[in-house]
Length: 287
Image (cartoon, rainbow, N blue to C red; front, side, top):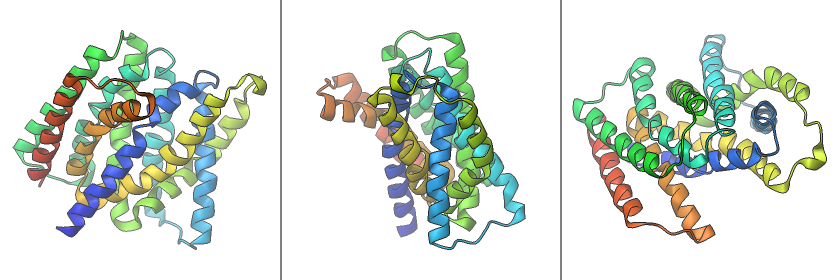
């Protein structure tokens, strides 16, 4: 019981951290190219991870783990950041919430395929209801779409779900922060070359907001958030804890209300309550 609660608390912290990722990316791509943003964030996070691994004298992963680490790097180090950065050039961060509502379902599906989990039928019912509530709300208030941007976000959700499930599976043996750290190291050579070949032409044209966005996605979205998220998925269950992602859009709304004095409508509150109920019920029937 305690392990389950710890897993959910860790997952919740990860979701709170991730809630700022898409807005920060949206701000950053205003002045930085998607390729530079994707590669630079990975390089910065990899250097921090390498320092952490060296300081704690962590053992290298086994050769048999390299394929899993490559899959994780493809999904969450390269795939999701790059695809979302490209998408956010043509759609708003609000629009992207439509697709974030599908991420828990994608994570649960890959949890079954890669993690060997077997949620009960009622889990899938409440998972789909929660996803539908988020998608419906976001579609109503997320602005006009763009076919190219929408397809990129859909692809981002698929590869991210794969990366989440694979990382959670490996975290059961290696530990959550070790998995994301070694995945960043695996991707470092490619990301370093990409960074050097896509340097900004005019550094002076990059605003403070873009630098702030890069700093956030490098330190928090790419490293710190995964420390909590993979730990939560590993000990609380991929399918179950993955449902916490349904709350991610509403954490963003809460931050906007507290920090930017933006209004929170009764509809937002009603959908949030409905999603919380779906998450609680999905958790009950996850195993």
